[in-house]
Image 1 (cartoon, rainbow, N blue to C red):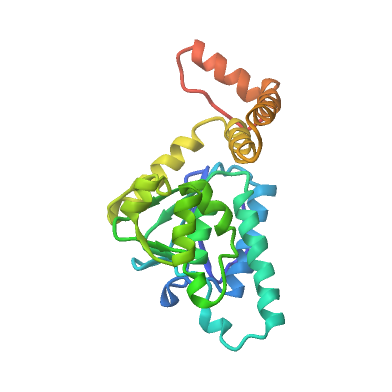
Image 2 (cartoon, rainbow, N blue to C red):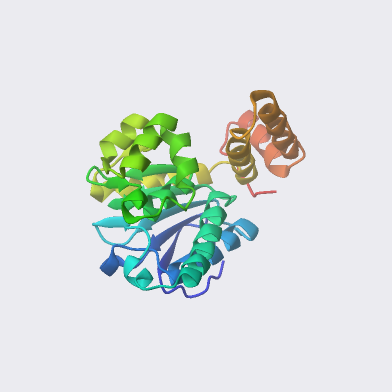
Length: 265
């Protein structure tokens, strides 16, 4: 797939089916500015609409200090109320596009993830992090509040009462605490973070892509429903896979005792 030349994002294909996206503003701890917001919105929208051969994405940050430090407060210094709201509209759409991307997205948190950076990681499907990573939704200490889905995604990850404690106090927490609370899936030593995230991405990419996308959709939206309505959604998603070449190939390969060759159709 051909992508535009992004100023704030680095893109690297790892094989035919996996893409590594690197937030590339290490001089400001990969802080989210207007340009990065526009580019993320364009990227996640493009990947959802036209994934091509891609089947999984790994999102990380440049450098060793930060995944993303949140909104670029230097850019926002002196910004008018109207300009602030206009910028935030871009950010809102970018977060929603990431959360609803049809491809699985793994956050490889290589350093601190504060404010909008943590919200970005929470919009991914799951999180791997280095031991020294620190997390916080610190917006209430700045006179604002989380506005990148944080009041919705954090409670879903760690529970209502823990999320209230963290958001209202604005206190930071460690990767180990995040792992204990269910926010972080795996803690990886820095040299192995991307390697382990990519190994999982390759395992996902080796499965039937239509099945992976339907399962992701069923989990994502089903959790917003009661059990039986969610189950009805699951069955609708399941039935979409019955009449696919990949379903027939998967069963055939199993019976022939070989690795299936999935084509996404």
